[in-house]
Image (cartoon, rainbow, N blue to C red; front, side, top):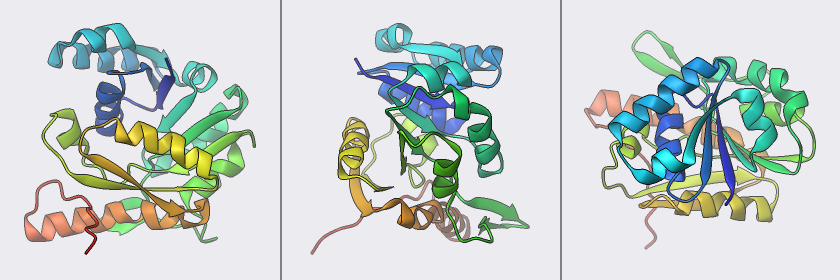
Length: 222
C-alpha cells in the first residue's frame, strides 16, 4: 500500500484529498502541530463514518510526513509554502514525489489576484529549489473545488499536471484518477507550473462575478 502524505493537510483541500486517498492508501494528514492534525482527523472521522477512513487515515507532524510517505501533497497557502519547504528540507528521505497544490492567489479588495514572484518562477519551481534533488516535484489540484470533493458530490473535472518527467506524471495521474470524476491531463514540464497555479485566481473571480458555485475546468474535445 502506497503511503500518501498531506503536508499542511488540515485545510479544506488537504482534508478532502485525505478522505478520498484513504480509500486505497495509508494516508498521513500532517500539520506543524500534531494536536491540530489530530483535531482535523477527528473531524473527518466524525463527519465521514467509514471503515476505510478509520483504518487508513492517521494524524502526523509535517516532518514525519516528509520522511515516511512515498507521495506527498503540499496543501498550504502560498504565503507559507516556501518557508514550510525550507523547514522540512532535511526531513525528506528522497526518491519521493511531491505534488504542489499551492495556488498563486491572494485577495485584494473584492478581487483575487495572482501572487507572482519578481523572478517569474512559479511556486512549484521555487519549492523544487528548496528540497533535495531526489524529490520529484509536480504541480496539480489547483483547479479542484475542495468543498465538492469533501461533500463527495458528483464531479466531472480535469486536473492539469505539470512535471518534468513522464514517469512522475504517470504516478500523479494514477492518484488523480482514483478520485471518481477527475481526469488528469499532462500539461508539460515544471516550467509551465505557473500556468496551473494562476488558474485558481481565474476560477475564483469567475465564480464570484457570475454567481457560479465551485467552478472548475473541463476540456472537451470536438
